[in-house]
Length: 250
Image 1 (cartoon, rainbow, N blue to C red):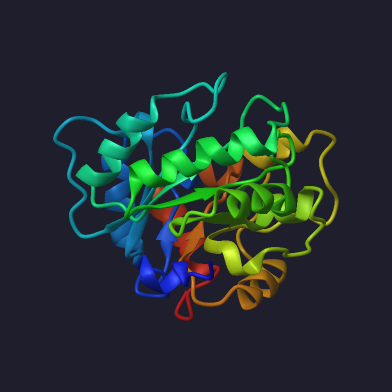
Image 2 (image 1 turned 45 degrees about the horizontal axis):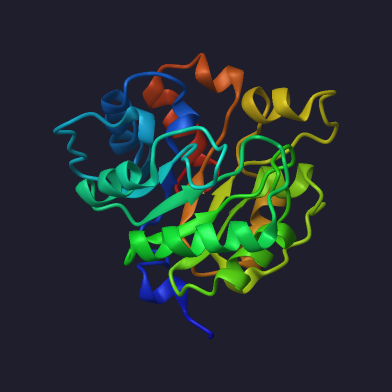
């Protein structure tokens, strides 16, 4: 069944630029909100572990609740019910689903689990994010699960860094299932360890990033740059530098 997930569930550029929480490292979430507002973002993501009772995110929309979740047997993280409750409490748009053990799941079982999560979370969007050292390493693998699950609020989260460093090798497949973009750029020469580079050596969005954004129009754009030099800056300055890479006025 063809479903316009982007339009039906709040996609598009209503949120001009979103700051992914991880871009500002491990500082308190409330400081991240202040930095995002000062830099000009209109949205922010949050890790489930950052949520605390009574948290309010004034002045910004919440794009997604990110991070590990026990959606499959053996996956670490909070129970899906708790993550869904957090998303509803913050009026978030979506939930991120990742496989963190590195073991490829059975496609049928993963699709059944993903479908159950989508139904429990509706009308929230639920998107699988593939990355190179995951058991779901590519858009092709993630897309097969989403398609088999067949839920209208299920989709893919495309991270441009993982797209270029992973088995997709920069090729965007299943573009019709992509409901959000996380963007950063890669250096010309990869580090010896993809794990280390993804957490410490991403670059602010550049020409490679723009080529992907053009291939998947009409979905929210989230800036996620894990970079040690950025982490060393004051939060507001780091947020501004990342924002300036894509903002027409940056």
